[in-house]
Length: 146
Image (tube, rainbow, N blue to C red; front, side):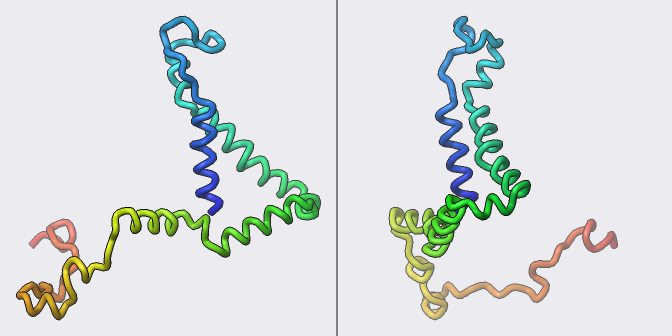
């Protein structure tokens, strides 16, 4: 959940701090070169600021002053919120995205599309039999030259 929140904040702050100044028009911010202006238009500086302020600063503060950090009432409130979100699974991004995709795309179990093993045998579409050495690496580079 924390990683998903950090990544979303990177994109959000990056979109807020991106510029729409067209290089070569003579209106570059702070009078920087056209190449530097093109770089600033991407919003990368916002992602760097987010990394430093939103991630690293709090870790440094917690490691430098652990007792003061843990005694802070805001820390307790944030901890309770984080544990609640973790408990209900709302911030488990993969599950949320998979659930939304399943509903939108109307996915079904594999048996709906290819049938059960018994149905495949009845329709002459049984699973293929593989050699006992399936999954092993072959070739001169793996078994040596003969």
